[in-house]
Each structure stands twice: as C-alpha cells, then as structure tokens.
Length: 578
Image 1 (cartoon, helix red, strand yellow):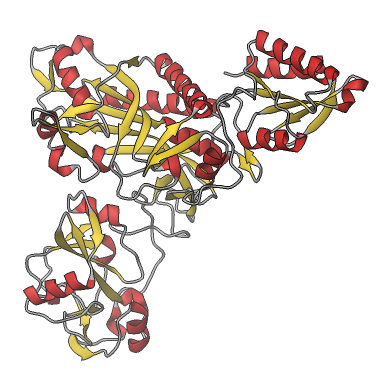
Image 2 (cartoon, one colour):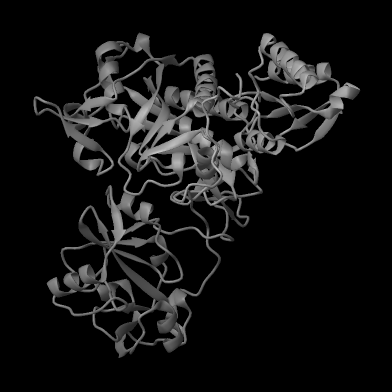
C-alpha cells in the first residue's frame, strides 16, 4: 500500500472528549471516527486490526472444537420473555417495534437465540457436548458511554455457548475455553490474568474475567490478587479475611440506651464524639434497587460493594438513595431523621440485609431514625433483627488477607477483554430446551457461555502498548507489518532502493506500506510512530554507503544495515507469527 493512497488522516490534537490513551491514539492516528455517542466508524486501519484479532480468535476456537455460526442482530421479544430477561435486563436493552408493531430488541448478547437453536436441533445426548460460536456486532444502550471502544454502545464480540449433559462435561469445556483464551491473548501480544468475577446480567454460578492489568486510567475495575498463590478476583467478587478488630463495645457501654449525639453526621464525627473505634459502629445505608428501598447494614469501617448488594437482593439496577428519598422513607415510617442517623429499628416496607461483618458485633452503636441521637450498647435483638439475612456485601481493601493462603492481598487496575461463565440451566430450564438422555428422559442442557470483546481487545492492546509518540502494535495484530520511508521522494537512488525493498516485502507475504508522499521527513516519522508500524525502514543519505536505518517500534532501537538484511528481518518475523 502506498501511503499516498492509504485512507487515513492523522490529527494534530487528541479529540476533546477522549479520556483514555486508546481513545486518544486511535482517533488521532486515523483508526476510528465517532458517529454518535458510543458508536464509532471503523476506518481501514482499524478494520485490518479487528480482522486480525478475529482470525486469531477464530483459529483458536476452531482448534478447541467449537463451530462457527451467525445469529441475527435483531431479536424477537418472545424469546426474551421465555428466559425472563425482557423486563429484568434493564435499560441497556435497546427495544424497538417493527412496522407490524411487533416488539424486538437489538442483541446485546445471544443466550436466548442460541438456546432456541439448540432445542430445535440437539435432541439426543449423542449430539452432546457441543460448542457453537459467532463473531458479530452487539448493542448495549450504556447509560454513560466512555473510554472510546472500551465502553461503547455498539461493539464487536465473539460469543460462544456450550451444551453438555452434566456438570462434569461443562467443567471440562470451561477449562478447554480457558486454555483457548490464554492462547488467543498470548497470540495478540497481551498478558492477561484470569480473575473471579460477578456473572451480572448473563447469570450463572461460576465466572471468570480475563483482565489486562494496566496502570492507565482505562482500568475499569480493581483487581485484588495474591502474590503467594493464584487467587485473583474482580472487586465485585473478591473476598478476604479480615485482621482482628474490636467488635464488642462492652468496655465502653454497660447498658443499651439512647443518648444525644449532636452534629455527628459522619462516621468519623460519631467515632470522635464517643471516643470509640469505628469498628463498634453499625452503619446503615439506604440504596434503591430496581426502584425499591434496601437498607444495607455493615461495620462502619468497611464499605458496601454495590454489585454484591444488588445480587444479594436479586436486583438488576442499583444506586445510593438521595437525601430526598431517605427523608421520604423516614416519613413513611413515622420518623423525621436526616441522613447520618438512620437505623433499621422500626423500619417497614424496606428490605434489610446485613454484611457478614455484622454477625460478630456486640454492644455497638447504631442510628435510631432520630436526628442527633444514637443507641449505644445495642445488639441485634434490641433492633428486632433476630432473623436478619447475612451476605458478603463488603468491598475488599488492599492489605486484607487472601482467603486461600492468608497472605496480604494487593490491588491493581484491569481492563476486561474476555469472560467465561458456567450458566448451568439458567436458560435451558425456563425455555424448555431439553435433550433425551440414554434412558429416554428429557433433561435440560447444562450450558456455558464464553465471550471475547474483539474491538475491546484491540483497544486494550493500545492501552498496553504505546508511548508518548503513538501506538506500538504487537506484530500479530498490527494493520501493516512495516513501513518503508524514503527520506526524499525526489532522490532517485532513495526511491529506487525503497521501491525495490517494498516490492520484495510484498512478494514475501509481508504487509508493507511505502511512504511515497512528498512530505518532510519529520512528518513521515511522526505519522509512522503514531500509526504504530512495528518496523520502519528508512532510506536516507546513508544509502550512498549501502545502508538503511532499521527501527523497531516496540523498543525504539535503531540499527544501520544493508537493505537485504532489513528485508530478511521483517520476513522472518512475519513468518514466526503464530
């Protein structure tokens, strides 16, 4: 490809709405153009990258025994009603009606469709296990699209679904996909960590995310991990063992009573006023889960992890209650307390759940729904909470102890590029998707689900491989392998050598670009670095001595060598791509 013909326009400045490196680089280097919020045009350079990621994914999935198909992007309401997700999925499901007034949606995922296919085709245990996958565009109406391709509304994804007759078969395929994912990301030049995670709207009992660990702002989730064992988990799923703490306030309070606590709106203010550690305070937080109030109780030195709370009460959407909503809740229960003095005693028409840290608390301090007052020396029986339900609602903190080996946990940021789920019968049972076993009995499939964000993986590669000058694509997914840059297109010798090298590279199967533009050398070099060609061969004045400059983008190393040596290095490198 001649640079003069390449459909690309690099920008001098980053887009004003770009927050993270990948969004900034891909837009400025001419890979993507924003169409509307969360929706992007994939220009020729980007499309070449995406196709390479797709082909790596396709190759490894085929090797793992999965079979590719393609399912419709637009899906009928009826199947989502069967699974129970039409109402439960939330506002991220883009709903629409056709000209016949039939309700449909744009597919954010394809569990319902694949399950309907399976129940029509997979009738016997002799046809199982099997794994079907597709690579297709998806649409999720994100409330706040951001980070460019990392959290857009429309994106390209590989999703696979396995069907088995037993949990053992499911677990075997789960491990098979785990290995396939490891191979895929290694081939894409990405180092990933598989972490335990929340299953979210997909559902299922066991799930793992494949995360790229990053120190950039694009990291979406905290990942807690142990350096002494293999434990790693997303913050919405992580658990830990806590160090010992004072949770019995008997030495401070010898009886249960209500006292004045003026102007103690925060935990720190209350702790200082009573001269007690915050571990002796029961914190009460009001959330709105699927439009319903939920009161979460937790030891005051700890923080509620909202996804855990949402899962505990079986919700799909969660947010902290506003001051007005809390005041309304108080009034409906005959109280007039303001935030900071809320407690569970006497509250009705509200779901109350407690974190496991509450179990061991005794003689503690808690709000009683009366401003400027708290109950001290309280126990759960004093609050009418004898049958309270306990869950793990706590956000893990760095330094707490690994649940598997007991060593201190560390935390880092991660970008999710893939996920795997053990769905079990979440979809097969409600959709009556069954097969006949060896005894002729109808049984639901035991299902698994396995996703990889194709466009997200490409963006994550930029987050992992870049510098101040531009992108450093791994050779396996770079849009082109090498660019040949004649410093002066008016110099006959430079152009002759550059053209010969370019043609030899093409003939050897290398994806090459020659910068034939009549531009200053600095412009050519800056564009080459910004776009991220893995190799650059510069033909300049040293060609009179028989040498060209060979630059490796990943390391910045520059070496003078013969033209034929430069060609051989690139050809050999391309041949060694897995």
